[in-house]
Structures are given as structure tokens and as C-alpha cells.
Length: 148
Image (cartoon, rainbow, N blue to C red; front, side, top):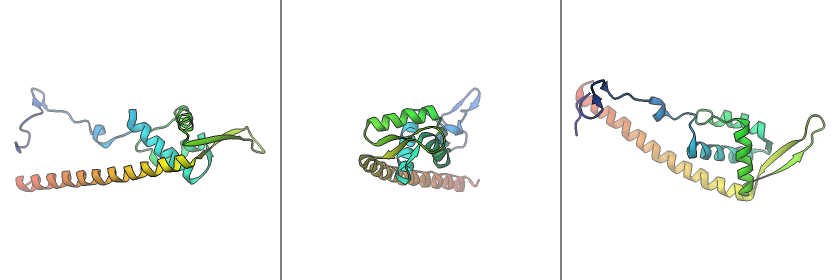
């Protein structure tokens, strides 16, 4: 293994390969990761209280803003999808003042799925912590070897 600083792969005429820190640190990305984070966040929020979609946007922003971004349109599409899967249910509530709102509640099946998701997240977090610890130890070791 080449342990010389600056040696090995990643060097071309322009010097060291560029590094996109956002690719490692995560961020408001898309795809399946984003959907999974949002689904867990929605179910966890609904497990705490029955609420309507706009409040869920605010709750998820407070809970997972460093992981994903959410807009009301996406929230309602996800809520309809979760409702179609039987994980949440909704009903219209008419307050004494103001417009009627669709209120969402987690179903028993949703609680079961949330438990599986939470277990999976816990296992993934433990694996990621082991990887992070290993990477930090490797950095410490190589810096100690090279005196820097």
C-alpha cells in the first residue's frame, strides 16, 4: 500500500484529485436515501402526535434538516403514499376558526414499520460509528507514522 502523502492514485497533470466534502458529509440530497429519511421522520413525528401536513414539514425540518430538505408538496405526496401503504390514515377536521385540515395519524401497521425502521437505523448507525472510529484511527496512525 502506498502511504506516501500525495503519492499514488488521484494525481494527474492538475495535481491532487479534487474532493467534494458535501459528498461525504451528506446534505439535502435526493433519491431513496431522502425518501427513507423522510418516511422515518414522518412516522416518528406521527407516533408522537396527530397533526396536519404543514406542521409535519416544520417538525421534520427541526428533526432532520441537516439530512434532508422537505417542501409541502413533497410532504403531501409522501403522506398519500404512506396512507396508500396503510401506514398512516387521515381525516378532515374542521376547527372552530379557519379552514378544514386533513389530519394524519400513524396506524398500528405504521408503528410496526417504524419499529423495524428504527432498529435498522440503530444497526446502521452502529456500523457507521465503527467505520468512523476505524477511519479516525487510521488517520491518527498514519499521522503518527509520518510525524505530522
